[in-house]
Length: 550
Ligand SMILES: Nc1nc2c(ncn2[C@@H]2O[C@H](COP(=O)(O)OP(=O)(O)O)[C@@H](O)[C@H]2O)c(=O)[nH]1
Ligand SMILES: [Mg+2]
Image: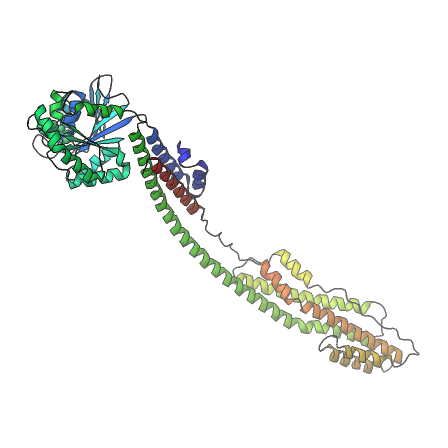
């Protein structure tokens, strides 16, 4: 299928983007290994069993030479790998490197033996494996046989045996006919079958005959074999397990009897990597490895989830903090603006009064000069107001950790607070017309254009009339009209400008964001990528398990 098929490339790329390439590379590498295990041309057959059940004797019988050390004590503490080769050769694979050994039993025993000549246990950690190459052997060229350390009651040796068994495509489990299968064996096999599937184990009972003759052999097959089949059935939970019977010692002397030919035939069929049993074991194991890898990825996903949760909580805390800070700044700016506008109202009102004074203190000008004057005065008042508001906003921005008021905001506030064109019309009453003044004043007060303005206008007009006692009735009416028009224009523009408080505050608040940007919310991409990888691995595992017939 190719490791790209186990984990699609886009998924690995996505993982690398969010989780760093080291993890993606590691996963790709693991998938590659798992995948390679499926199509390996070499078949490995492991011989396992309780120590002294006769594994080494059985292999010696099969290869037709008493090469591997045997004995009543646990002789083999290191796996021995046998392969066909150009010449007979023994090499010890140690931590320090390979070394050639003389091709004889004693030399092999020297490196694999668990018990030294003095009877004491020997440390074997430094020898990992013994490689035996055999010229002109029955072992097919693409097949390796592994004589594994026997299991016993020490966990260390049992672990070694389990590790060796896991390397095989098939485990030939050798049972000593004199010993019932133990609890340790049952546990060992259960663990192995869980990982490699029920097809991975074949049972061979090594028959210890009291005398190696045909009579005893036939008796054993008739009288004792059914018990062993039942025992294997009991231990494995299989209804009719495949159990072979062979006597290693008897068959060494008579290779065509004592169960040897069927065992040889069976081993012969198992040399094909496409053999149904081997293919099933490999798929089963692939499913197990993918499931294990998925669990590994899930552990990473859990860690990613935990750190995402922490980051999200931290982000929410900062966001709330920021929201509160924004509200505080907003309120402070609005208050400062309100205060400044209230404070400057008098200055705006004064603008109209000053123009009225101009109108009444000198001879009435009939050009546009009162409007221009009013506009200039309002402009000054508005500029003062803008300056005060901007200064207050600048102070608040500093105090609240905001950016300083930017130039464009200064410009916009100033522009917003610029008075529009104002005109003060000076009426031109014909001398013959009478009674117009009463109508003008009455109309001004009656319309009550602006709250509070009517009375002010009334008072001012009263003043204007009092001051104009020396001029004609018609001119007095024009002065009163101009006064009214000036006050009305001032009142309208003042009211418009002083109604801009909210707009000004809005410009200032939005123009002075927090000095530091809130960091982006935490990214869940890593978690999602890991979960997607896990789902894919589990789906692939499921597919292989189904193909393996689980
Ligand atoms: N009678 C008898 N003894 C055997 C047979 N196979 C092995 N043995 C003896 O059982 C002991 C353990 O054998 P060995 O091959 O070293 O077992 P291993 O520890 O499983 O490799 C040795 O003393 C062998 O001679 C057999 O078929 N018949
Ligand atoms: Mg042995």
